[in-house]
Length: 329
Image 1 (spheres, rainbow, N blue to C red):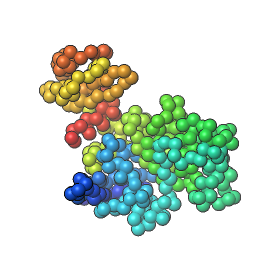
Image 2: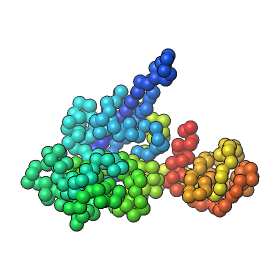
Image 3: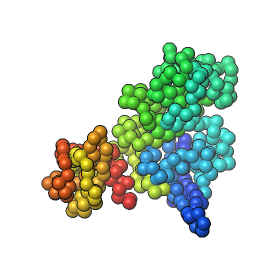
């Protein structure tokens, strides 16, 4: 296997992580489960890198190994040249970790006092705390609201406070684990602007998200992980090229019949099929070759379902992601 660039900020080289688990109650049967199987990648300075994948794909396990919360079964990983196992303490000094949700904020404290408390825990020198906190409040757009109790913050404001907390010790590498999950559109947009500003400030960022449009807008490169392995990596544009010669047929259905996905998937020329919930309807999303018209054939497999809008469009990063994950099933 070719060696990755020595000067990369984050390196993962042939990482494996195996869990020992059991089934049954009276007669337990033990088995090994490989959550991560030979994952390798490198992230360069100032890059925003996105490991994407379905739940259980292995991306969270990979991140936990990189931030020293899990020890790899085999393989190596380094952050700024420090091994995540041998030099775990040095790695932790150089990374910030921000997770989605509202945990980790002390509701009865003001935003400012939250940051001052964590600044003490991070070992920020007392003489630097005030200036550091002020600059971070400006960065995340909370200047003027810092004296208010966190319990009065919107979810988006709390999440931006999370980001500020993760940057208190000025880490050069920041891990963002689904930071916009559960946010309203306004809050999510504001947080995406904050994430973009981190890269502008020279940080190296690793971002996980289930929102493909978000990854498309923010990430310099993406690695799609499924069943513990990287099935594709490249820029968003490069990944979209995987389906660029195709077309997407979307069918709005009110009450999708059982077996619909399987029947449509059996059609010659169909590359991938998925279903997305949208308000009171489900949308059947079918990837087809650009030069083949399958709309009528698809409608013929719906068994008299109540069909709404039918459309045909160009593929997106989400379509590329679905095709990559589906082809690995």
